[in-house]
Length: 192
Ligand code: ADP
Ligand code: MG
Image 1: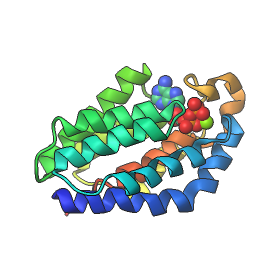
Image 2: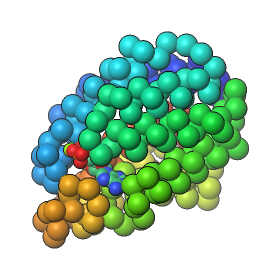
Image 3: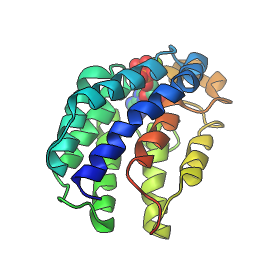
C-alpha cells in the first residue's frame, strides 16, 4: 500500500462513517451518551477535508492530528494519537511486515493511553485481537473483524462511560469496538 492508496482508503472512511453514524449512535445510546456516531463522522469529515496529499508518514500524522482535534470524546485522543504514533514507524510503501508493525503500535498506544487490557469491552478488544489473528493467519477479512466486535457484546464494560452500566453493559456491542472494525478495514488486512 503506497501513500496514494492509503490516502484514498482513509478518505473513503468519510462515506463509511456517514453511513454508519446511526448504527454507532444507537450502540452508544445503550451504553454511553449517544455521541459516538456523530464523533466519528465529524472526525472523518475533517480528514477528508484536511488531509489531501503527502508522504505515507505525513498522511498518517495529519490524519492523527485531525482526529485528535475533531472526534472529541474518549475515542478521539485514542484513535488520533495512535495514527500519530503509527506515522513514526511507517514506510513509504506499507508492506505486510510494516503493516504488522503499525498495528502493533496501534495496539500498544491504545493500551497505554487508555490504560486498558483485553476483555474490558472497548475498541482495544478488536484492535488487539486483530493483531493476534493477523499474526497467526496472515490475513483478516471484514467478517473476521466484525466477529471480533460481536465478541464484545457479552462482555461487561470496565472502562469509559459504559463501565457505569456495570452488568447492564452486557448485551450491546461496544461502540468503539464497532468503529475500530471500520478503521482497521482501511488498512487492507485481507490476505493477498
Ligand atoms: P465518550 O465515551 O467520551 O462519549 P465516544 O463515545 O466517542 O467517547 O467513545 C466511546 C468508546 O471509546 C467506547 O465505546 C470504547 O470503545 C472507547 N473507550 C473509552 N474509554 C476507553 C479506554 N480507557 N480505553 C480504550 N477505549 C476506550
Ligand atoms: Mg460517547
